[in-house]
Amino acid sequence: MHIFFYYLIGAFLLGIIPVVGKYIAVINTFIHEVGHALMALILGGQVRSISLFANTEGTAVTAHSGRIAQNFTAFAGYPFASICGFIMVWALKNGYSSYVLLGWCSLLVVAFFLWIRNLYGFFWALSFGAITYYVMFQNIAFKVPFVYFITAVVVVQSVLSALTILYLSFTRPDDSGDAAHLSRSTVYIPAFIWGIIFAGQAVYFFIKEVQLLIF
Image 1: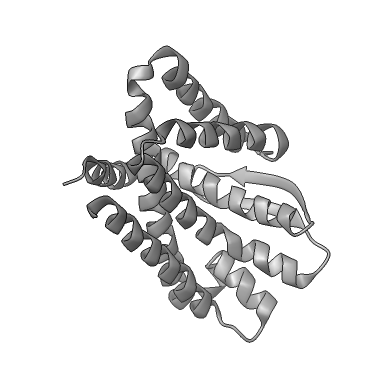
Image 2: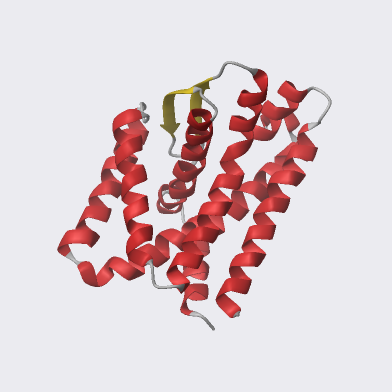
């Protein structure tokens, strides 16, 4: 069994521990919200703020010139997290862990100074940034395990969060986050369809990640 599978199991088990698990799961929330922000910028919009919360929820407030751009931005969070997980797994398998860490640090720094605007978001970014700094410059022996751990959290939580939205899109469609937003914006496409799309792409990328590790 590839060693990364043990990290996946560890990331899942840590994720269900009260308080600590939610703090760790915000890694994926952060990636998710950055996905919204980057899509807004790509489509010519603006990023006004990103908020991260202790319950693992997050919001990205963006501005757009049209509804199509707004819908693409609303859609981007879950696929971006899944794609990031896939790229990170590919990079680890091919010995590019340093590039994964560099990308992670870059996102943290940019988001902290430009986008994050709420108190818990500042606390999380500062504290996790301090952990990252310690691993990079004070205890480099943990650098590769740290990158494996971050990657495992993104892979596990990107799937779990998408499956949660799928469940909510059927049981509480008005409270199903991005699926609810897209449902209101697109009018004729109900929340559960968006939930199925989000969950489907997450599972697809997870399968591709497993295939990368096995073959």
